[in-house]
Amino acid sequence: MTKLTLAAANTLIEAAFKKAAEAGMKPLTVVVLDAGGHPKAFQKQDGSSMLRYEIAAGKAYGALAIGMDSRALEPMAKDRPHFIEGLNAVSGGRIVPVPGGVLIKDSAGEILGAVGITGDTSDNDELCAFAGIEAAGFMQK
Amino acid sequence: MTKLTLAAANTLIEAAFKKAAEAGMKPLTVVVLDAGGHPKAFQKQDGSSMLRYEIAAGKAYGALAIGMDSRALEPMAKDRPHFIEGLNAVSGGRIVPVPGGVLIKDSAGEILGAVGITGDTSDNDELCAFAGIEAAGFMQK
Amino acid sequence: MTKLTLAAANTLIEAAFKKAAEAGMKPLTVVVLDAGGHPKAFQKQDGSSMLRYEIAAGKAYGALAIGMDSRALEPMAKDRPHFIEGLNAVSGGRIVPVPGGVLIKDSAGEILGAVGITGDTSDNDELCAFAGIEAAGFMQK
Amino acid sequence: MTKLTLAAANTLIEAAFKKAAEAGMKPLTVVVLDAGGHPKAFQKQDGSSMLRYEIAAGKAYGALAIGMDSRALEPMAKDRPHFIEGLNAVSGGRIVPVPGGVLIKDSAGEILGAVGITGDTSDNDELCAFAGIEAAGFMQK
Image (tube, rainbow over all chains, first blue to last red; front, side, top):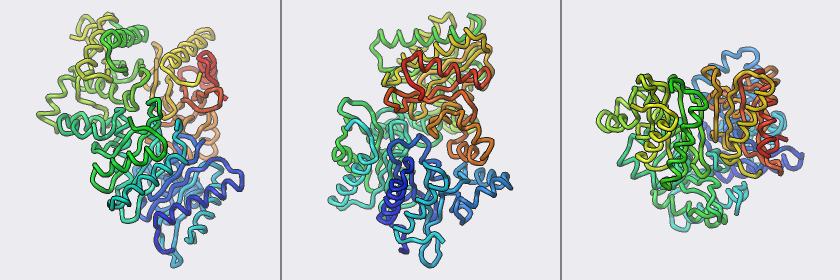
């Protein structure tokens, strides 16, 4: 895949939900942002809590902000909290620096967007992001 | 329908897209918010411009804010612009006062959420909202 | 009354609701702010739309901001919109410049707070504010 | 109870105040938010300090944000402060991660809203929340 079409984004979301269902995870919220950080598609499963859209988007936005999965933001937040706080300041408060935000790339390594997932543990959220990206024919590395 | 489930929200979005395709409309962006103004599902068709999520959500949020379809906000914006500006101020800038934001109700008239659509003319956007609401088994009056 | 106690604020709110019920008005939202603009008491009747707290508070805050009922803000918003926009800017977006926000004074004319009401027409909202202030033993002039 | 009516919210607040009075607690501030995080009712007892509305609402909003009592937010804030800071960023600064924010559920376990209380110790605030929820016929688990 070389374009983040709506069809591809929906495939990604469905595959993430499928992965979560198979593993017996909690209800998930999945958002796909394009390369400019703007939402392309989004679904929030029944039983998810109130602020899940913002959390999911905050992981994906954080990944796009620095060009690395949001997993990379967590040690930065621990070691240099002022940097993440600065990122939140200049982004207008749009970043949640925990795993679950994963870049969506094409086979040439170009960034097409990012997916953000929340609802289960951050590690599980990220696994579902990987599954979704693969199912939709994208790369995450 | 008495609950705004994810399945129902997705049905609503698909029906809105179908209506637009049949009528040869431009690419649409459709967002479904729950009764508290929080996103439940969202899809942006290929070819839509950058800020369409925010515009669609702004119509739906405006409808929920005052309990009337966003069509009712447009004459207010013309006759009493300071009121709509005040609404935008106290909502943190979340309202777009033009048609295309329609309340989603159950058969008892209770507000379950709102759909916001943008992409074609505001009148056409609203027609697609009506079609989606009907297809998903909800009421808009 | 010389103090805006919780008991007095609750009496004010109940009297505003009573006035509205007697006149067959729509469901109201009533907030009482203290002289510093901080909420003291608040009630939102069943059937009120989503953003009514913010609208009611926006009227009361606007009244306190300039020391006049929010009715005085409406002609300013029409004649000098840049002034109201400036007020909203410096207040962090907290002002809705339409009638329904009324100062609460003691018999010496000192400002003790303000009440903000929304739900029916702005004129009716204001009538309920007057009724509440009188019932609680305060002055509004 | 299956609906968070204004009557029920007022009953909840009165019962929380009664519990505090019986135990000789400090003046309390109690806010009831609906499931979408919007205020339904609120009272601040005489002698409470300036920012108590915001603190009480911040506990209740935090509970709704992640679908757990705000007590669960405190260890997160200690162990992963960047996560809570991220929550505050994406919520526009609306979360106070200490005990005293408790979910309001119906007998089927569905979240109807949340109550936030501040004024005494966080543990005591929470006890009053429990008392209010029970008195109003709701569940908190």
